[in-house]
Each structure stands twice: as C-alpha cells, then as structure tokens.
Image (cartoon, rainbow, N blue to C red; front, side, top):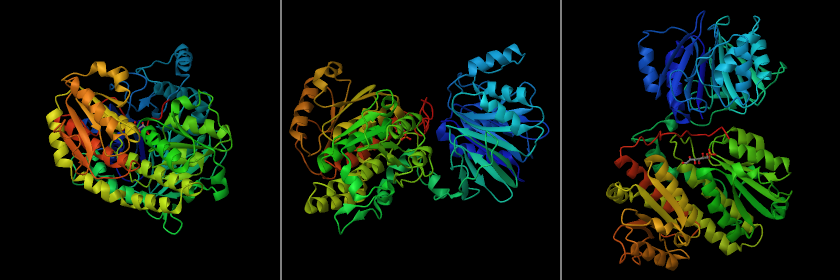
Length: 608
Ligand code: F6R
C-alpha cells in the first residue's frame, strides 16, 4: 500500500526513481511524486499513474541530480490530488519526505505545530512529520528525524531528504516494510524488492525501530534510540524478467497462465513418495509436535481468507483436525480460544497485510504455534513468525490475486496430507492424494485450454450489472473467490453464496437480468446443486454452469457450460477457480476496465 523508492549514487536519479515507481505501481496508483536532492530540492508531482509523473518530469529537461526519493500513493488521508501527493516538504523547503503507513496522532501534532506558526498545504498526516522534523532540526539530520519519530504514534516507512546533506537519504521503519538495496557505488531503498532487483541482488530488510543513513558508498544502521545495529544481508531470489508482463497484455492474464508452473514450484521437493506424505520443513515441527496439534485456526483476508476456507475442508476431512477460519481483522478483537496445541496459520501473499499481522501478533502472544503461508520472502509476517511455508509462486504483480490463491490451496492440501499421514490417513489414501497433488499442474494446463470458450461466454454476459456465484463443499469458498475476482476488476456487483443459502433470502434478487455462475462439478453434492440450478432457472436467471469433463447432466438446463477436467473435491477448487479467474478477466476486458490497476484498490494492504 503506497510505494517508496529512493536512490543515492553517481547516476542521474530521476530515471531510476521513475522506473522503480513503475515496478511499485501495484501498491497504489492514485498519484505519484518525486524529490531530487541537492542544495535545493526539486519536487514534481502528478495525479494518477506514474506515466503522468513521467510526462510532468519531462517538462524540466535533463535532470542531473544523483539523489532522490519517490512515492506512488494509495490515499488514506485526503483525496488523490497534487496537493496530497508525496513527497511532502516542511515550510522552509529543507526536508522532503515520503511515507507509507498512518500517523495516528497527526491531528494533535498538527495543532501544536500550527500554534508555533507552521502552515500546511495538504490534508495528509505525512506533511505534519516533515514540519516536525524541521522543528527539531538544529543541524543534525539524524537527530532531528529520531526526535520526530519519538513523538509519532502509528505506522511508518519513511525516506527523507535534507538540503544540508545533499547525497544522503534517511530511512526509518515501524510497521511498514522498508528494504535497502546495496549497489555498487550506489545505495537504494524501497518498500519492497521489486524496484531493487534491476540494480542489486543484495538487500537488507529493516526491522521495526530501525533507522538507516544511506549515502552512495555507505549504509549505516541504527535504532531510533541511536544505538548501532547489524542486520543480515539477504539475496533476492527472483529476476527482473519474472516481474515483467512478457507477451501478455496484462499482469493478471500472465499470472493466470503461469499457474501450472507456479504450482509446480510450490510442490517441488515437498512430496515424500516413500512415506506417501509431504515434507514441509519450514514448519519446524517434529512428528511428535505435529501429532499434538488439536485444532487449526486459519487467519487471512480477501483471497487468502478464501484459500483458508478451502483448507478448512482439507484439515477436517483428510487429517481429522477441527479447523476454522477467521477474517484476520476479527481475530484479535474476538478474544479467540488459543492454547499451545492450537496451530495458527496466517495466510498472506504479501506477508505485509496489517490485519493479518495483527492476528499473528495476537496468536503468538497467546502462546499458539504460529506458522505462516506467505509468498513474499523476507516479508514481515514471514519474519515475525519465523516458521512457515513459502508459496514460491514468484512475484504477483496484478492487484487481483490469482496464482497466490492456487499456490496457497496447494500448500494447504500438502499440509493436510502431512498431518493426515501423521494420524488417520492410510498409506493407500495418502498415495492417492499425493498422486493427485502431482497432477495439479497438468489439470490447470487443461483448464487453461478453455480460455477461448470462456472468453466467448464472458463477452456474452458482459452486459450484466449483477452476478451470483454459487457452490457447495470446497466449491463454496471457490464461489466466493470467483465473485471477488469479478467485482474487483469489473466493478460489477457480484455475490458468492453457498448454493443452499440462496433460497434463504438472496433468491429474491434473481430475475432475467441477474446471471448465476453455478459450480456444478461432479463432486459430492452435485445432485443438490442441479436442484439449485433449477431454482435459479425458475426465476428466469440465465445460468452458466461449470462442469467436469464430459459430464452432460446440466446440459439439458443450460447451454452455457464451462468444462474443467475431472478431479476429486480437493482439487476441484483449483481447476474451477482458474476458469473463474479467466471469466473475470475477459468480462472486465470486454467492459474496458483497467484490469491490473482496479479503482480504489492496492496490492498489500498495510493499514488496519
Ligand atoms: C483480491 C486480493 C485481496 C488480497 C487481500 C490479502 O484479489 O488480492 O483480497 O487477497 O488483500 O492480501 P495478502 O494475501 O497479501 O495478505
């Protein structure tokens, strides 16, 4: 949520900053800006995408400054506008600051600063901090920033410039990720590794309470208490190309088509053919500790929560362990019943979602075993839990999550296999499940072949302003996910419902203008689903049915069919969701929507 990039070195900073912002644009895209350092600061801002900022910057001709900071914004305080875009400057123009996060006591600080004569040009919480630094400045940049940070409540990732220190960037972190890239004759900072990968493989993830001073040839790490600290240097394990669009028109389509490969990467080296089980060593639990787990609580938001809801079926059905899913934001306010035998599984693609992080901290505080399912290596949730299972899905850039979901579900299935074999699952049943997991990439490949047929259906239904998605069993959370995909990228009202729940109220909304996507795969519950389809048809709703293989049971009721390959109820969510992702993509495309950057959204939601 919001993207920060900074560069100090010997090359002109402007192009590096703009290039970095483009790679971060998925984090927020309602406005952008940059400040270039020197004896005077040059600050340029624009509303909308980074390309608008680029055009604005071109008006200044060749810019030679070799130090700068930049920001792409997802609005929290104040509407998207040039006035509210970052960087923000103090009244004297000595300091420029970019910020991710929220300053909770900004109103009180603003009042105090106003009483001292400071004025404010924006509605943001960030501008307050720029003036607060100026208020404490007596010639020592680090001291002034540290003093300001001590007065702030809330979350932040900051990068700050000061005209008295023309080649220095000061960065600090509390609750919003900051990564430093160690270059050759240059150093960089960003809110995630995406903009750094083109310049270096070596990065340092700051911890909360860290402050760093970057110059072209040095990175000095301290705490905001001004104590020296050392942090591990990590390697970036993906290349710049994997974060590009390749031959695809949108990141979302690329990521949908990447799924056979990303799931292969998720599975690789984790299946134990001898024991007919899975090996998930990142969990760091002995077989004895695994056997003691008496309950599983899954916490996540959005798509990750839907993956967790599929996992709930796996754990109960395959491993016989009671499982429940909590919307992560509710977790810490519900006083959840957690004991040392409860395994808490936070699920988060980004590993930075503030609500999920809060749940992690609450669960750890209550003494649970907490193991995270994250995609982004080195992310806050992955580091704070210290144990878990990485998805290895590769960078997910599209705001609408696709490959992370299928990799999450695959990890949950492997975990259920491992826990099941550790208790009641027979060797033969373990073997059957293991073989099915191995087949997932091929089953997804088969499903992707349906893309042209799905595109035709999406074009046919692109008129609809309301949509229902219904499913049963493991396809119930799949229906929720299908509806989420459609609404977030096409802005069409879409609701996911359990097929049985429809008749308890929502059926009142059905008529000939409200299509229903019915997940009618051949899995347990299919007969009842066929009954539910008839209930929809009786209200004149057009029905699109997802069916398995050459199953023609629903063909007498509807001609609009999406075929996915046959699989068990455990794998059906994976094949089916891919079809629904494609449907949402082509539907949004037919309506001319901006698919990779849907309005009002941002990837990585770092505010609660
Ligand atoms: C939907 C989507 C969001 C995220 C949610 C959690 O396509 O991407 O619903 O799933 O914001 O994000 P992570 O998984 O990063 O915690």
